[in-house]
Image 1 (tube, rainbow, N blue to C red):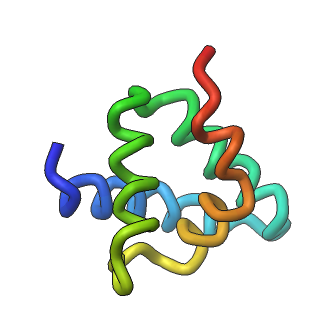
Image 2 (image 1 turned 90 degrees about the vertical axis):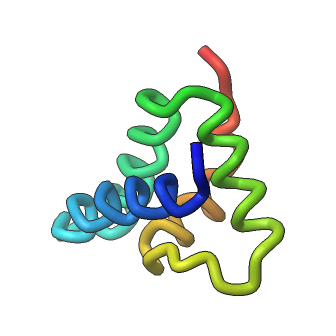
Length: 77
């Protein structure tokens, strides 16, 4: 999957969770959504994008959720 598509998808998810009044819960839920509904290959590609780019075009809430809950995003169930 192309990185632009991953960024678009992540930002759409972030837009939804950004409306939550509890920021910390929103970060947990956003990371949990990516962990549960994105296949491992998509999650790894998103993390590689963050690690390798200076400007990812990801929204601040998405970056914060991923950086805060990185280990849970990589978890395979």
